[in-house]
Length: 495
Image 1 (cartoon, rainbow, N blue to C red):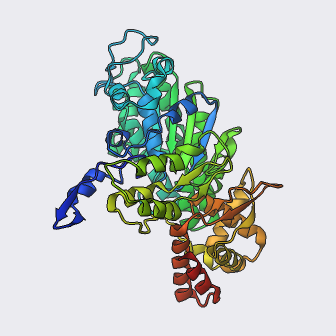
Image 2: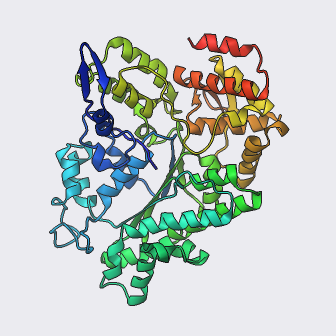
């Protein structure tokens, strides 16, 4: 996923008289669409989130983390991968000269990446010595590159491609002397364009489990970390575009089988981290995993401050001399891009928008949307949802009934809300939709509100988001008819 992390590259401006204008080079060096930790860590506006690594490694079991699009999930995973992985050359030989697994790894490019940039995690020498560069890692990304998944065949082709990319990262296994000839041929087929496309459904669902076993053997019985990014995107894609509910169900079962087989009762897999945007939409794909630690956006957990920018991080970032921001612009940044509040009282800023503020030095609206084909306009046609969104757009808050676990029936209701909105007037459907909008970043929890019987107060987090919501309502009004005069009141209240 093209997900931005805590980087803001050194900004170069070309002067014309007294004005400054952005050059092409500015955007290239800023690299706002990169999720590669190595490209990000040395930039002038990097914000150190490396303690995310320690939080995860010292956690237990399978962890599921969700946060909105462009809040740094993919680069967090990439950073974790670079910290844990055994770095090898093209032939699969270890780059480190260490003789045994107990020796600390201090002679690789990844090590230099962390140490030369003085990341916080490197101050914990014991942790570094024990964990850095000691594990094989499987990394898989289920982003489907803007393809609408209307049929099961399209879905399985895209899943094959995601798995193909994971095998390609370990292409050296084709020549490993720890594997037999049949296993090496399987790796060769998964790495080959002509080979992976011919894989059967069974071979697809068994693929990552097989890869974990092969890596375990190649690396002298070292158990594997499994990092899965965008686990929910095939599900959301199917929810919006699958031609029938049966096709949607088949796609969920496919993703579930791949994830289940690599993470459940697999001796060769040590731990798993699963990252995405929406737990509600993706939950059926994880339904059979049993116990997992679900850390949803803005809920009270130890990962709450690692996605987006915390208030303290934002203040420190804005104060850096390289950006030379005025106090007025800093105040605008808070009202426009801050306001996300976790249940544990952590204040979060929209990472994507803050980065663009630093790039342009203008407090414009940069919200990039959820990045998964969804548009707020989809929900405005549902009478119960329209009423709630108009109410929230005035700066009000309301109670939402939250669930700890979302079942397949909830996803079907969400699909109907989006695709057949005129049929839904039930307030419980409004609760489901608003909980979904919290996950996507449209809404936040109210800071002082206490949860009671699964209910929490929500509101629109900041002015940028209120303006975006109003813009979507105006589009709705143009295409589907009148929205009450309250629209004008809401627009005035955001100024």
